[in-house]
Image (tube, rainbow, N blue to C red; front, side):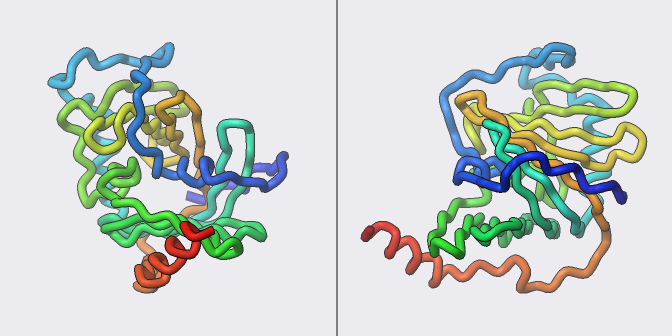
Length: 229
C-alpha cells in the first residue's frame, strides 16, 4: 500500500499523553460507549462477526511492515515519523522533531524514550492495547469485538479487553477490499482520543534485529535520575 503523506497543519508539539496514545493507555474507570452507526455486540459471548475475523486473519498474516505515520492528539496536536513492525510483539516508532522520541516494544516490554530530555517510561506489553495489534494470531474471541461498522470505503472495528487495558478501547479502520490497516484510535478512560494514521507501508520486509532492542540497564539509570530530580 502506498499513499500520499497527509498534510501537516499544526505544530509538532507533543505531550506524553500523545505518545501513550500509540497503544500505551492503561486501565481507567470510564464505561465503554457504542458510537452511532455501529453494530453493537450484545454480550461477551457473541460470535465474532465474519468480517472482523477475516480482517484479523489478514492482518495477522502480515509478519513484518514498515511505513510512516501521523499522530493526532486529543487537542489536535500533530506529530509523525516512521514505524517498524514485526510479529509477534515487536514495534518501533521513531518520531520526527527535536525531542527525538522513540516508542519501542521488544515483545515483552514497551519503552517510551525522550532522548533529548533523557527520560524513559517502561510498561509490560501485556498491559497495553499494542498487545492486540502485535499478537502472532489476533484473537477476537471472549467479547473483545464490541462494535463493527461497515461502509463502502471503510470497515471499522472497535476492540476492548478489560483485563489488558481496563475501560479504554481501540478502534481500528481497514480498507474493506484489501483489508489493509489504515489507522487506529485509542480512546482512554477519560474519553480522549489519540489517532494514528499509517501510510507508505511496505510488507514482508527485512528489519534489523536490533531495531527492537531495549537497553534495560540504561532505562533503569534514566528512571533513577528522573526520580531524583
